[in-house]
Length: 132
Image 1 (tube, rainbow, N blue to C red):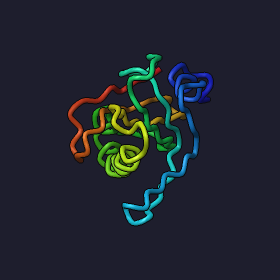
Image 2 (image 1 turned 60 degrees about the vertical axis):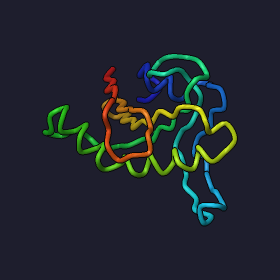
Image 3 (image 1 turned 135 degrees about the vertical axis):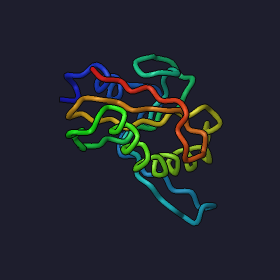
Image 4 (image 1 turned 90 degrees about the horizontal axis):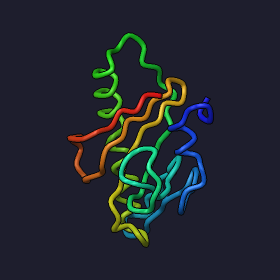
């Protein structure tokens, strides 16, 4: 399903510094380790090529169910934002981590991408829901 979707192909396509299931561990943060589903360099928004932003994308299998689009986005982002911000915090401590970071939740069964710029907070002010 993921490769049949343009956004899924974009996420999994060869990108600069792309890695899947990348383990991030930083000794200065108490040797805390996290495993990122997909990280790569790309443009500022989904489907854009480039090397201006670090993208951190986590894959989810949750279905929308009876929730409205707005309710689905709000509950899913509230549920996973802290996890993705933790990934971003670790990534910022690595070489090249001073670049802007985009965070995303990709739902291959829908298919749908929810994404927003990482700012280190737990509030989402700007997001781009992408439905194919």
